[in-house]
Image (cartoon, rainbow, N blue to C red):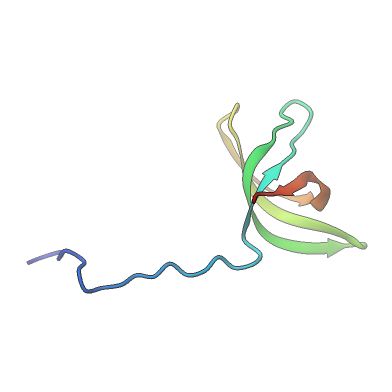
Amino acid sequence: MAGGSGKGHEHPIPPVPPSRRHVWVRGPRDAPGPHPGILLGWEQRDGQWFALVSYYLEGDGVLAQQWLAAELLTRVG
């Protein structure tokens, strides 16, 4: 039978890498948030930490991705 039922095959979900975490993002003045986001990576610049984050601006229906200062993020959970 074409396609099959998928029985007998396991597709385990890999653990989430430590750098990938759900966060709340404080946004700009016109959209202060918090906005749901996911942290994609870290970078240190001149002694300050920045995170590459993808986050959703619900009011505008926009998905944004940018480097943000760590103090704009709050870890979920």
